[in-house]
Length: 432
Length: 179
Image (cartoon, rainbow over all chains, first blue to last red; front, side):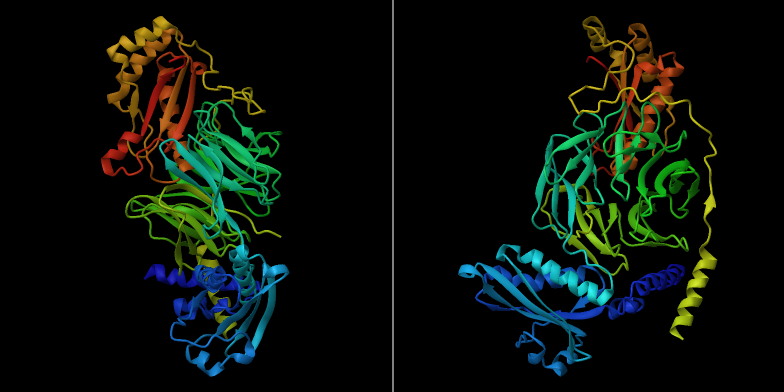
């Protein structure tokens, strides 16, 4: 009872941020699943393009569904596929309760028809008019990227926020005994490529906000050390290899500095260091554990986990004054903090009754909402628009997998990257 | 109408939820940190483990270590969320303290944690266990600057442990430079 009461207020607060970003439809979130935006993505008419293109509507549908803000309409009983507004029978689609439909066609173009052009429209069924009509060209092999960009365009038009369907994630997989790889892939797990292979564990991958580099912790020196790797060139540098442990890299919002954790011969403590390894400074000095630093979007505060009050809880420290404030109070332990892009939501891992779950806390009201069911969820990180969370969970065979959950808690979707166990994962930034 | 309900609700949230408290570290500052002397900026293959004071074990000390039954036990186990050395393991620590002092040996204590919870926080928990063993050795006269502490966190842990079997991973192991 109490939880649903607070969930109500929490959702109202989400609606407020949505309004601020000119979203028209997100307000319906309050009604739960019934008020997700109903949309039907119709298979695009294929004028002699390649077979793979025919999957584009599925990619777009999966993208929109994953966000938790849309519900896809079952079109299995529909036989006529319009390609633009003139061909739409509005009363039929209204009967299916589809508020919007996406239609289009694919034409082979260019020299020897080697390129394709997708001409698509977003149509408002209730208002009986075309909202958007766009033509986009590309190579047939790029059909997934083109579909993700179409989904991004639809998402931004209907929610007022940027879509994240054309972004990347990174994850570490254990491929076998003494065989670990750090992969980069599309946000939905497609097109993975390994950027580091190692005999030793790799943890804590973190994308620089400018998208150019990834910092991570490697155990290849028989102890944890921090590398920064250029994604384009593959060249990597050892950022921190001090006595003791070197871990938990966190990029500052301007990509110029990192917060890191060093131990020397005592408990974990937080430092800041320039991205070129210069100018190292200790942030606080306590007897207790201070770890898992995460910057606020304005770069003025660092959130972190600490056992200074006994159990692990999340605190924030002012980077200039070193003043510390406790942030989480509910639950046995709260760890792994990170901030939403607008700085208003804290994302973390909550441990209660033996179960680790992904949770968010409204930093205005300090109200907490658990997004996942546990019992072994970890590694939560926001999508670059703050509307979804990437996290790891253990399946019934106790193999760690990755998935996304929408921050309205309505949609949890696995990401299929194969059967091998995942260690940790992270989400890259939006590209300009 | 809709807006006024929203506003009223938001105000209720604001009024009810403001419980942030200032908690400055009540425990005071730790002893001064060592200088940042052991940095190797270029990423060359420097084995930093073993850079502590104290001696690498020579062959006769290695033979003694291998032969001594009381030194075979290297592990100190901890209770869940605890960093206190249990009385069961005082013997392990004092046996090694005697050996370390005799040979002025350079030591590495490796901390571990079970798989549950975050990798980074577990790294910090393993470190805290390693530090607890280091401090117990220091209390028996071992020179602290000869002891290096390293954490593997949960990276060596059984990823499918349940209940009491997870206790095997809440552990710190005493190791020697040169072995």
